Length: 290
Image (cartoon, rainbow, N blue to C red; front, side, top):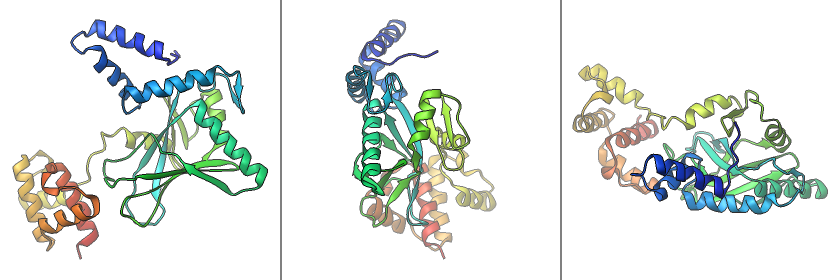
């Protein structure tokens, strides 16, 4: 079943949900619908739908057939550090609309006409992985070549870049037209399109793991071998004790971790949850333990 998203249809859905669950209230329902569709809030979704309405008035726009993107499509991309071994978001999400696909095609045409390797312009993804990668990325650019497009970002206070995989424009348009399941590196899951150079299904599993659990492997193994306990099953206070002891065993201190987190990531380590402290501890040990 295909449901066309418009301002009217979204409001109708919100009305039906509010009637069934009046305790929520329509404003809250609208925010939940927007979040469920992959948008930061309802204002963002509303703005996208208004732009799409204007774009649909044209029968065809620079090679984008009418109806190809009657509703925005969330495109999920694998992300990596350009410099091997540096931290990076694991994924980037981008809302593909008629308007921005049209712009991408225009830039592609410029590259072909002028025989350019690529053109660059300021464009932010809709969102990016801020689970384990907590540094801010205030500067994003999109690059478009004769065949592909991709994102590049510069993390704050860092001297390296992160990039997404290259997306072949022709393949994206074909997938949008046919809406088939896709291939190993492109996969439709519901109304969202996932791309990973190796395995799109694996990217889906990773992005919906909010669901992604912190990797405590070394800390967990230590707690199990020394105390015979499962770290994740311990109380928050006991986990805090084990973190301090684990750092001491590694000839490191919690103050070192706190200073490193504050300096590089502008986070107050002491104010973080125990789960987050465990994650920071693992990352610090990986970087500094001899």
